[in-house]
Image (cartoon, rainbow, N blue to C red; front, side):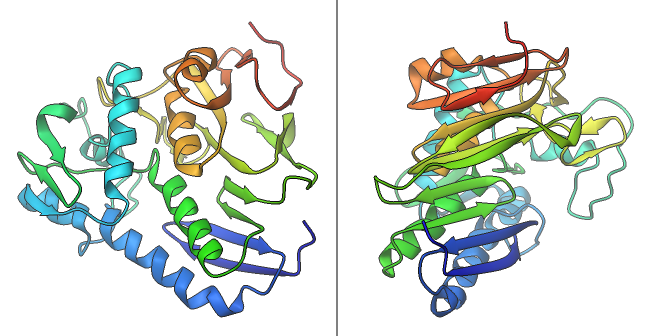
Length: 293
């Protein structure tokens, strides 16, 4: 794809860059409005969000657009990881210091118990019900979904070829004959080095690592079964057709091996273990420079 325009902006706590083969300025206002609408629904960092309302009141509320797809994926990830991936870790994240004020100061004692996902939250095509006040955090998949929504907006507005990059969650739409986009995989212990390369054609790539959003002796990837930061895996990457799925699977890879996920979802994945070894699925579209197991 020959890039003729680029758009950069900050939203949902990360830097966005969109590259396309035609001007993006006519779409900038619509993109910004879409980002703000999603943030107003799903952010746990603003008092006027749906998430904040549910944390205060519980109860039944209108489900935001595309919310059914987001929650359905969480339901699948919750099942395949044995409860490790859940959007009900918001209170545990606040306990560890990752709160609306970005205090990054862990509170004393163990984290609060994580509520049971399936017993607490239900939904249908138009509404979401929480049986009690609970703090949702959709960070494991929400950013990926928002990348997809931006991509869909561009297609609707006549921009068929583009790359949307939201802090490493990447969606590419390109002609079938376009050369793949080669993306370096950042070494989790040294950002100046790469552990490999992945090729993205017409699809999405998402990454997660414990060296991002890390503070004190904590990081943002929690195990929903005990509310504590994970320890065995330090970095993951997932490739899928859509960024929502890639983002969710990048989190699931902290708890489930790449081949097991690839057997259930149309994806490929890599994860780096704390001891420096790597695991990857057989269909990984790239190369790795680390020893595997």
